[in-house]
Image (cartoon, rainbow, N blue to C red; front, side):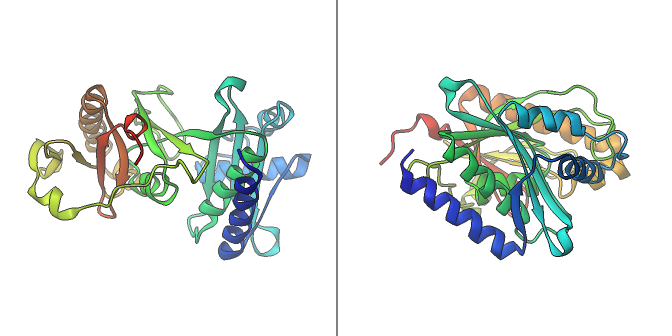
Amino acid sequence: MTPAVTMDAGALASAAAHTAGVGVRTVDDVAGIQAVADFLADVWQLPHTNPPYPSEVLHSLVHAGGAVHAAYGTGERLAGAAVAVFGPPADRSAYSFVAAATASDRGVGFAIKQAQRAWALERGARTMRWTFDPLVGRNARFNLVKLGAVGSEYLVDLYGPMNDGVNDGDESDRLTAAWDLDPGTAHTPEAGDDEARARATAVRPAPDGGPLAVRDDRRLWCRVPEDIVALRAADPALALRWRHAVREVFTDAYAEGLRATSMSRDGWYLLTPNPREEPRA
């Protein structure tokens, strides 16, 4: 990675933090890491005595060469946090275990990811990966459109049963986001193209009676619920039917060679031929 790309990444991270009104820095002290562990427990609706990432685990990840980033708002109040480590050296890749921001996120999530990107580029990484719930449309749009990542693989029930306050009662299917850290080679999401989607042929119904998936000769669109977290709380059985329906669409599409490359504002994934295998112009 060229020094210019690394410098640009640092400048973008600083600008993103300024826009969000936060300061983002790495933390490695006992109090700072404990505060991050407590923050993540709050996001996942768990008691501080049982966080998703205990402070001792976070300390170990930092000791192993990873980084815990924290975003601080007014009065040094935590507004976001993220944790990343490196994969095998040959991969020149970083792996983000978690990234989270407060519900009132006004660019904090983007600032955190840009800080992670700058940190990873400084250490020679070229890509970063993480997983996310494919039914959470707002996260999909952030990852695929705002950051320009690609859904590189669909993982069925990756973690098995989960018992946190956000995912309780659901199965843990995940999409892997693959983020090219070099803007010169990064994937550019295709436009939503609502007219093309409207002309496409419906191929599967959704649990709510509407269309679930439509397609044309080379692309496929798949719809997810407007708010899967609220649906899980109100009707867990219906939420699970959505999980299985979307799983069937994605596993068939990925076997065909399609990949999730964009997400519309109204909850439709766009799946296209794998952009990593297409020649660049």
